[in-house]
Length: 180
Image (cartoon, rainbow, N blue to C red; front, top):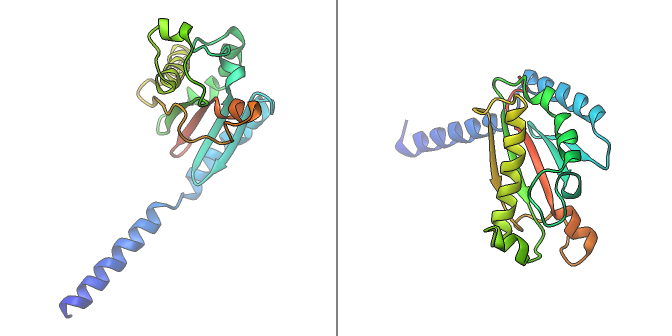
């Protein structure tokens, strides 16, 4: 085979591998589907939005459910809501759990600045860390869970309205893997 023919075959093989890598096996999908069904029954629509898409199960919790306005410490009601996740999350052995924190674009106030939080990125990181710490204390495998903050990046609504800002203040718990 000529050199250019080998390049085309090699390129086609790489494209095929990339396409297969994006596929989710039936057993992986079934595991996540089972958790989706369980979590959908546990949460009210005003507490969390549950989605299953592209091999990832995502639980999006609105900020007011978890944190006091402008704060990063979990409220008592937040612990009750997060406790609903624990039975599902603590059973995982092969599924990564990623906790992402987001904020709106309102600047950090003086009270948080006195506590050493000077940016929305830091605030979102503290919130995500707080959720991870709570879940680990409740039995979630610390080797499978991680936290990251994105601040005001990746808004899901306009920051021009109070409703949009409220939607942007959120925690997303994403399950990546086979659901086992």
